[in-house]
Structure formats: C-alpha cells, structure tokens
Length: 172
Image (cartoon, rainbow, N blue to C red):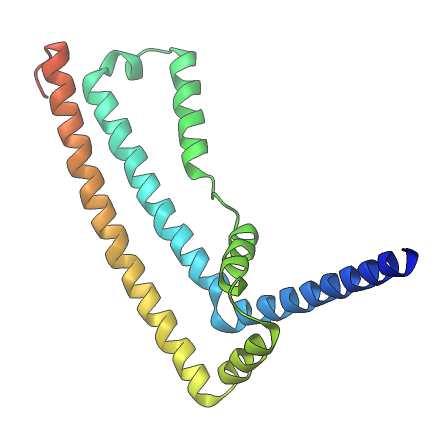
C-alpha cells in the first residue's frame, strides 16, 4: 500500500512541475504575442468610455439637479467623487487579466504544442503575424469602443426620456 501512495505523490509532483513549466511557457508566449499591450489598450479604451460616461452623467445631473451643484452639499460632492474614483479604477488589473487570458489560451494546448507555437512566433513569419495581429487588434478595439459608446449613448438617452415621462419632467 505504501509504494502506491509514494508513486501517487511522485506523479503528483511531476504534474506540478509540468504545470510550472507550462505556465512559464504561456507567460513567455503572452509577452511575445503582445498580450500585455493588447490588454492595456483594451483597458485604456474602456477607461476612455467610462470617463466619457461619467462626464455625460455629470452634465445630465447638472441639468436635472442644478441645485445640488450650486449648493455646498458635501454628501453629494463626496458621492460624486466616489463615483468618479470607482469609474477610474482598472478592473481587472493588467497582470491578473493576462494570467486569466493565458489560462484560457493554454487550457486546450499541451506543452509540446506550446513549444511549437513559441518556435513559430520566434520566426520572421511569426513576428510578422504578431505585428499584423497587434495592428488589427488596435483598430478593432477602436471600432468596438465606438460602437459600445454609440449604443450606450442611445440607451442612456432612451432611459432618461422614459424616466422623464414617469416623473412628469420635461426634458431640458
């Protein structure tokens, strides 16, 4: 019975070592592919959208509740500052996002397959592939964020129109 347990433990440590090796290769691949930069670009685009959303919300609140902005109501100013601070946070942090991306990416790949992928990305064609993917990702993110912003603007306008109908206010 004891030798079987020892064998199990030994094999378990091999799996752990294999996992560490695979994690290291995935980390290298994420750097080579520019995943850090890709995620940071996505975060910047999302942050721009959130900042724009905050400014639009603030302008709308000023139009609908001018007395709050004219008063020295500290609770309101604190709430607005808290709202802006929370909107300004990057969620998730870059390092965490890259680890999640790597885990998802590597889930269906074996270590020998990762070796071949790494080998490819180190070739001139692989480098060209990376450059093209980075450019496409950058342009697509811009397009995507524009679409999201347009949609959010339409939905927000519709929401306020319906809200004004419910509360009986006239749009300003």
